[in-house]
Image (cartoon, rainbow, N blue to C red; front, side, top):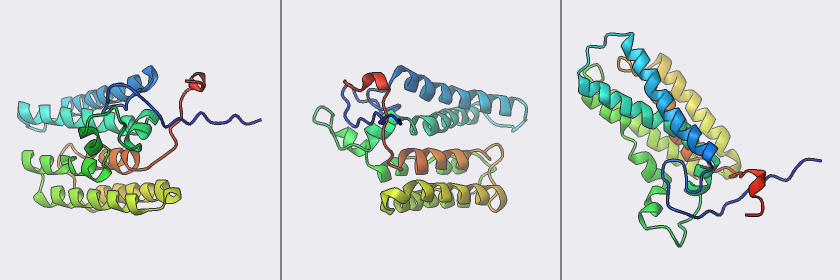
Length: 204
C-alpha cells in the first residue's frame, strides 16, 4: 500500500530566508553545499581561462555564483517551498511578507544588469533583455493555474536555455548565468509545490 505523503505547511522558529524556516539539517547542508559548489566551479573555470579581469570582477563573480547555484537548490527545498508559499505567520516580522512576494523576490535579482555594468564584454542589451524576460516569466507563472505552473516554468526555462545558447551571446565566462538564474527564480522560487517533511516528524 502506498504511504500517505507527510505534507506539512506549518512551521515555527527564527525566519530563515536562505533555506526556509525550520529546514532540516539535511536541507541546510544541501542548500549551503550547493553554494560552495558554485564557488568551486567558477574558481576552476576562471583559473583555467585568462579573462583579464580585476580582482573585484572575480569577487563579484564568485558572489553571484554562490547566490545563484546555492539558491537554485535552496529554493527547491521543501523548507523553502513551505516558507515562501505560506502567508505571513503571526510570529514573523513584517519584512518577511515582502520576501514572500514572488515578484519582489524576482525584481531584486539584478544579476544580468550587474554583469552588464561590471564586465566590459557585456552589452546593456544583454542585461536589460534578460532582466525584463525574467520578470515577465515570473508574472506568467504567478498567473498560471497551479496544476500548470510546473510545466509552464519548465517551458520558459528550456526556451531561455535555447535563446541563451544560440541567439544572444553571453558575456565572456557567463554562459551559465541565465540557465541557473531562471532555474532558481522561475521554477525554484515561483512554482508552488507540496512541502514534504520526514516521516519521523508526522506527529510534530
